[in-house]
Amino acid sequence: MKQNLYKVGFILSIILGLSACSSVNNKWNVNNSWCKDTDEVTNTTEIVTLSTDALFKFDGASFAAILPEAKEELIKLTNTLNNSQIKIAKIIIVGHTDKLGSDDYNYRLGLARATTIKNYLINAGIETNYVVESKGKLEPITSTCDNSQSFDKVKACLQPDRRVELHIEKIK
Image (cartoon, rainbow, N blue to C red; front, side):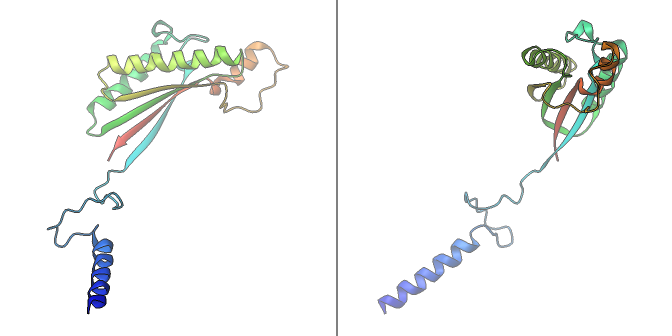
Protein backbone atom coordinates (compact mmCIF):
# COMPACT_ATOMS: atom_id res chain seq x y z
CA MET A 1 0.00 0.00 0.00
CA LYS A 2 2.73 2.41 1.00
CA GLN A 3 4.63 1.58 -2.17
CA ASN A 4 1.56 2.38 -4.29
CA LEU A 5 1.22 5.78 -2.59
CA TYR A 6 4.84 6.54 -3.43
CA LYS A 7 4.22 5.59 -7.06
CA VAL A 8 1.09 7.76 -7.26
CA GLY A 9 2.92 10.66 -5.58
CA PHE A 10 5.84 10.29 -7.96
CA ILE A 11 3.56 10.23 -11.02
CA LEU A 12 1.61 13.25 -9.76
CA SER A 13 4.81 15.24 -9.19
CA ILE A 14 5.93 14.47 -12.77
CA ILE A 15 2.54 15.55 -14.14
CA LEU A 16 2.59 18.74 -12.07
CA GLY A 17 6.18 19.44 -13.09
CA LEU A 18 5.37 19.03 -16.75
CA SER A 19 2.26 21.18 -16.54
CA ALA A 20 3.70 23.82 -14.23
CA CYS A 21 4.32 26.22 -17.09
CA SER A 22 0.77 26.05 -18.40
CA SER A 23 -2.29 27.79 -17.14
CA VAL A 24 -5.82 26.52 -17.09
CA ASN A 25 -8.18 29.23 -18.36
CA ASN A 26 -5.58 31.79 -17.23
CA LYS A 27 -6.42 31.00 -13.58
CA TRP A 28 -2.89 29.94 -12.67
CA ASN A 29 -0.03 32.33 -13.11
CA VAL A 30 2.98 30.04 -12.88
CA ASN A 31 6.38 31.63 -13.28
CA ASN A 32 9.09 29.04 -12.81
CA SER A 33 12.63 29.69 -13.97
CA TRP A 34 12.50 26.82 -16.47
CA CYS A 35 9.26 28.08 -18.06
CA LYS A 36 9.44 29.99 -21.31
CA ASP A 37 7.89 33.43 -20.94
CA THR A 38 4.95 33.40 -23.33
CA ASP A 39 4.58 37.15 -23.04
CA GLU A 40 8.26 37.59 -23.88
CA VAL A 41 8.82 40.73 -25.91
CA THR A 42 10.88 40.19 -29.03
CA ASN A 43 12.90 43.17 -30.15
CA THR A 44 13.89 43.97 -33.69
CA THR A 45 17.04 45.74 -34.73
CA GLU A 46 17.23 48.16 -37.61
CA ILE A 47 20.64 49.19 -38.88
CA VAL A 48 21.04 52.71 -40.21
CA THR A 49 24.36 53.38 -41.92
CA LEU A 50 25.64 56.93 -42.20
CA SER A 51 28.54 57.53 -44.57
CA THR A 52 31.11 59.55 -42.67
CA ASP A 53 32.31 61.36 -45.79
CA ALA A 54 28.76 62.61 -46.15
CA LEU A 55 28.57 63.08 -42.38
CA PHE A 56 31.96 64.49 -41.34
CA LYS A 57 34.71 66.33 -43.10
CA PHE A 58 37.52 63.90 -44.02
CA ASP A 59 39.49 62.97 -40.88
CA GLY A 60 37.01 64.90 -38.71
CA ALA A 61 34.96 63.70 -35.78
CA SER A 62 33.69 66.77 -33.90
CA PHE A 63 30.24 68.31 -34.11
CA ALA A 64 31.77 71.25 -35.99
CA ALA A 65 33.07 68.78 -38.59
CA ILE A 66 29.56 67.55 -39.42
CA LEU A 67 28.66 68.68 -42.94
CA PRO A 68 25.48 70.74 -43.55
CA GLU A 69 23.82 68.01 -45.64
CA ALA A 70 24.50 65.51 -42.90
CA LYS A 71 22.91 67.77 -40.30
CA GLU A 72 19.74 67.72 -42.41
CA GLU A 73 19.85 63.90 -42.54
CA LEU A 74 20.39 63.73 -38.78
CA ILE A 75 17.45 66.08 -38.22
CA LYS A 76 15.25 63.79 -40.36
CA LEU A 77 16.45 60.74 -38.44
CA THR A 78 15.85 62.30 -35.02
CA ASN A 79 12.42 63.58 -36.12
CA THR A 80 11.50 60.09 -37.27
CA LEU A 81 12.70 58.55 -34.00
CA ASN A 82 11.02 61.22 -31.85
CA ASN A 83 7.69 61.07 -33.71
CA SER A 84 7.36 57.32 -34.08
CA GLN A 85 5.18 55.27 -31.77
CA ILE A 86 7.91 52.65 -31.56
CA LYS A 87 9.80 52.40 -28.30
CA ILE A 88 13.55 52.11 -28.56
CA ALA A 89 15.28 49.74 -26.16
CA LYS A 90 18.83 50.63 -27.13
CA ILE A 91 20.95 52.24 -29.81
CA ILE A 92 24.40 50.83 -30.48
CA ILE A 93 26.52 53.32 -32.40
CA VAL A 94 29.54 51.85 -34.17
CA GLY A 95 32.24 53.98 -35.80
CA HIS A 96 34.20 52.55 -38.74
CA THR A 97 37.18 53.94 -40.64
CA ASP A 98 39.16 53.09 -43.74
CA LYS A 99 42.57 51.38 -43.69
CA LEU A 100 44.57 54.62 -43.92
CA GLY A 101 46.40 55.35 -40.67
CA SER A 102 47.38 53.23 -37.69
CA ASP A 103 45.09 50.81 -35.88
CA ASP A 104 45.12 52.95 -32.75
CA TYR A 105 44.39 56.19 -34.61
CA ASN A 106 41.51 54.63 -36.56
CA TYR A 107 40.04 53.09 -33.42
CA ARG A 108 40.06 56.47 -31.68
CA LEU A 109 38.64 58.22 -34.79
CA GLY A 110 35.79 55.71 -35.08
CA LEU A 111 35.03 56.05 -31.37
CA ALA A 112 35.08 59.85 -31.54
CA ARG A 113 32.68 59.87 -34.49
CA ALA A 114 30.30 57.44 -32.78
CA THR A 115 30.42 59.53 -29.58
CA THR A 116 29.61 62.70 -31.54
CA ILE A 117 26.54 61.02 -33.06
CA LYS A 118 25.48 59.74 -29.61
CA ASN A 119 25.73 63.25 -28.16
CA TYR A 120 23.78 64.63 -31.11
CA LEU A 121 20.96 62.10 -30.56
CA ILE A 122 20.85 62.83 -26.84
CA ASN A 123 20.68 66.58 -27.48
CA ALA A 124 17.88 65.93 -30.00
CA GLY A 125 15.83 64.29 -27.26
CA ILE A 126 16.26 60.60 -28.12
CA GLU A 127 16.03 59.01 -24.69
CA THR A 128 17.27 55.44 -24.64
CA ASN A 129 20.24 53.33 -23.60
CA TYR A 130 23.32 53.97 -25.71
CA VAL A 131 26.35 51.84 -26.43
CA VAL A 132 29.25 53.45 -28.32
CA GLU A 133 31.79 51.26 -30.10
CA SER A 134 34.54 51.55 -32.64
CA LYS A 135 35.63 48.91 -35.09
CA GLY A 136 38.28 51.23 -36.50
CA LYS A 137 39.53 49.69 -39.73
CA LEU A 138 38.69 46.08 -38.79
CA GLU A 139 35.48 45.72 -40.83
CA PRO A 140 36.02 47.26 -44.26
CA ILE A 141 33.37 47.06 -46.95
CA THR A 142 35.78 47.64 -49.83
CA SER A 143 38.21 45.03 -51.11
CA THR A 144 39.38 46.23 -54.51
CA CYS A 145 41.06 49.58 -53.82
CA ASP A 146 44.49 49.80 -55.44
CA ASN A 147 47.08 51.42 -53.17
CA SER A 148 49.28 52.22 -56.18
CA GLN A 149 46.83 54.94 -57.27
CA SER A 150 47.03 58.56 -56.14
CA PHE A 151 46.04 59.33 -52.57
CA ASP A 152 42.86 61.10 -53.71
CA LYS A 153 41.78 58.06 -55.76
CA VAL A 154 42.52 55.65 -52.90
CA LYS A 155 40.70 57.94 -50.47
CA ALA A 156 37.68 58.04 -52.80
CA CYS A 157 37.74 54.27 -53.30
CA LEU A 158 37.83 53.65 -49.53
CA GLN A 159 34.91 56.01 -48.84
CA PRO A 160 32.35 53.22 -48.10
CA ASP A 161 34.57 51.99 -45.26
CA ARG A 162 34.23 55.34 -43.47
CA ARG A 163 30.84 55.07 -41.82
CA VAL A 164 28.86 55.17 -38.60
CA GLU A 165 26.27 52.47 -38.04
CA LEU A 166 23.31 52.87 -35.71
CA HIS A 167 21.88 49.56 -34.54
CA ILE A 168 18.46 50.69 -33.33
CA GLU A 169 16.84 48.02 -31.17
CA LYS A 170 13.08 48.53 -31.19
CA ILE A 171 10.67 47.01 -28.70
CA LYS A 172 7.76 45.30 -30.41
